[in-house]
Image 1 (tube, rainbow, N blue to C red):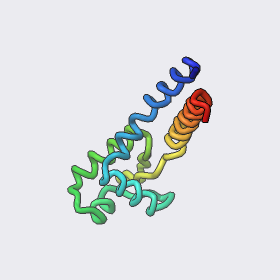
Image 2: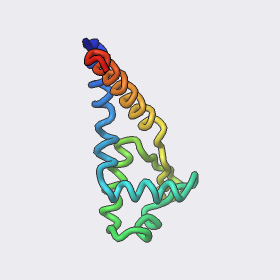
Image 3: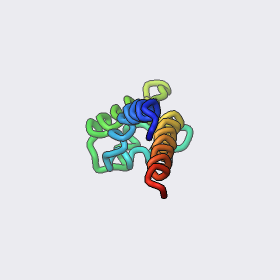
Length: 115
């Protein structure tokens, strides 16, 4: 039998991952993440992201807000401009915890089924 506390913990971790999954479910946001990664530590501003994309500046700003709200990127103000940098480690840590929890549950299911 799978421990109820393990199920409860895994559900809580799933809920913590929801913003990450929502943010990463869009192909334009995936591309923005790659463009921001390509920019390196300095980050990249909306103008430069716009030049790399077929999206309008308002559309890019909307997608950046979703990524920022999910914690995947962080803004850095330099003078009058805002540069966006990756901020993935906390999200990846939570997703890794979810994978580990699910692997533990799967292992217990396999034990119960005699595999």
